[in-house]
Length: 282
Image (tube, rainbow, N blue to C red; front, side):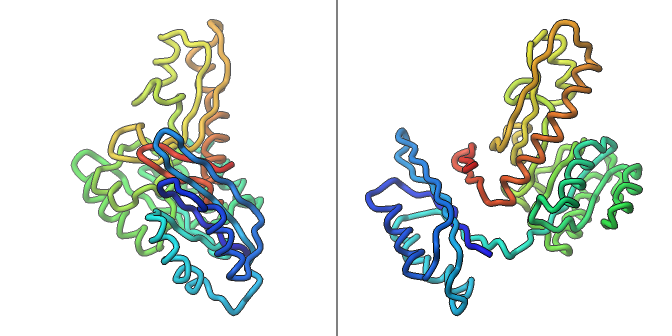
């Protein structure tokens, strides 16, 4: 098991040395270090992972001991421990291809997570959830009951102590009240290469526009529709011979893989959010 520090702060002399010395002083052995400096904003970003060689130092001790150094740097930071398995909730509607990918990869052991529940506004995918022995919760949503249902969903998520929410082609726009409860932990997959073709039916928009490539984008959810910080993207080439159905078929593969990658990066604590965009330490 290891410890991971994600930190951002104004760039200044001696940051890497100071953090490395902290790890060494607490009997840690660095196994990975990635850093980035934004020269325009003069901001420093780092992800550092180390093994804990002194079992007498608890996780709480590490956090407490690092606080003075973080305050000295005027840093935003968090420390994660790989022994902790975050709890994941998956929201879906009727499309199952992205959900299937996550469930399959989780079964293979690719994700350090526990899928605590699957939540849907349709009943169709309950059979799939049952086949993986994952609790399934059905919240039918209309214009009249949307906010009430979201309140019930939030209560359920808090009951399960959910750490991460994945929208696996969940065809609902979350309310500002819902999003505000879970900042930078709701991950969505949008079936276009954002910022192109936001909103609904992007494949038809792409077909009408005659583009030569389509894409998929995984991003954190904010109250600005499809404008949250981007975690991962990919594209595939298309031609004038492709119909809208062809675009949808080709796009499904991208959606599956891009969301799977974004979730993997987030679970490995490789993503920092800064001013509406991300620094991703791959």
